[in-house]
Figure (cartoon, rainbow, N blue to C red):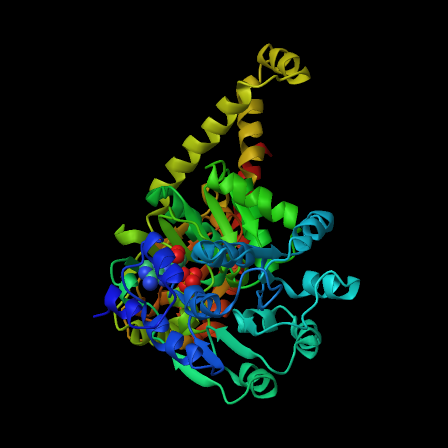
Length: 530
Ligand code: AMP
């Protein structure tokens, strides 16, 4: 177990120890225990550690211990995002206070004039995003010739964001007599390649991801076919009523789209991703922090380095492909010992990935079934009404007179019903019946498929009829039939993959039968008229 004594044993300057104490750190974290002595010995360090492990202080402390006030720029930290740059600046700035070390963050999106003025004061440490940093170097407002330390923070993210050419340009301008630290959540091929070109015999330090913090979380998963994920997510949101949620999507486009659809369904959600301008990102974060939006839909990259304390629920709308991302994502909730909930939507073909995640975190994730559609429908009806009531409180302009005219007409009720129907158009669930049925027979997920059948509610279809129809007309047994969703003109049913054709043929022939029947009925009806 680490103690404050371990900080005292590191041979740090009193001023640094004083600020460590003021910051409230009572013991070094594992990455600090490993990285600080190596760095203080003058070695290059390649660290595998994520945000939340104390990595900033792991490189910040040895740097602070060696830089001197008033001697110009001595250390440069490259970061992928503005948010991370600001956080790193705040952390190192605090720890450097007693030494009178000034730390400046430079990033795109902030007025360059403001940065010019701040640079004139001669900060000893600069934390910057690659693009803006290069801009300053070209203008001659940042000069790296006296640099002693260079840090590549979240190097994997920087590479993912396409910063490699910029990083290389910065590296070319750094003096070769320097110490280099690289921190990254993953140390894959490309990172090692970068390290081999720009670091000298780096010592590798690694820490286990913070599995222990996620042990406190409630972790749950729902198996949901891809098409039903949005409806499924809404049902879970309706029943859980989370105070503040962070929803992870795989792509920027996906995050945008999900936020848009959630808003159309009456939830207040904002997207956060790298394609947004700095101002848009700031506005989004402000709305979220002030509680004006309660759902943030983000990509992994955008969510990195965000310091949001009060998230009650993390959703993996798209399951992450790599294990560490899972830990990183769900670790965003349940901070400071508070319980949190982590919910994953797992597509049927992803169960193997889910098992790998469970193995990685050393804990089983609880399986859950989607709440019944009925309870969700009543919640959605309430929401529809409350949306109307809320709008009714605002000025209604010409619609008020229109409503008065309608109320005077005979079909007022019908017109109101039609208005509700239009308003609810996106709330698919009012129109859809879904039934989560566990397939009794043990058929692996990857061998199952969802077949679209041309029979819906308009054809008199309901789940019981659908099962009867399939069992009567195919070789399938009831236990081989899984999830069912009945829509207006079609339905979806989960069956073993090798029976798809058979089921589809049965439903088509049944549709043919129905057509014949309808036709004969209408002929019969007409008879008495003659
Ligand atoms: P980081 O991984 O650098 O983003 O740090 C995550 C959080 O841990 C930050 O809020 C730091 O202020 C905090 N932290 C860093 N080192 C320690 C330490 N030794 N003890 C307690 N908290 C720390």
